[in-house]
Length: 151
Image (cartoon, rainbow, N blue to C red; front, top):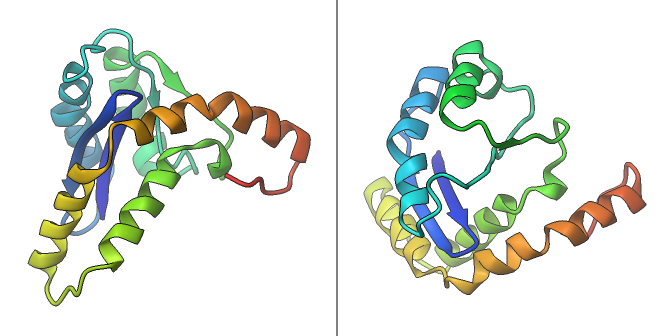
């Protein structure tokens, strides 16, 4: 499992996660990486967190997580559960998967190295395109009602 983030200016940290990720591991990942990733492009006090899977998973909905976010990241973009069409990180995961599949991987350690290498190779313009696509995504979702959209 991986955790990663990006901003319009480029890619943030990618964290490789061993075993399962519960609420406490998730909070630690946010503590150790979210603000650091926002400092790189100089947006530490103005960023908004768009959580990947707001799908009622307990690691995202636990009281401890919600309280941590409230006090440390008050600008969280909330979407209905299971509404991944609006979330551009899905595009990033797809891109990372495409790039990773081009390699002949024979071990977990090699997979980790390639994931990190390919993450770092993602062009700075790619996240900007995704962020700029959000208004169109929102309009498309509204127009499509309950049906999937092209994103």
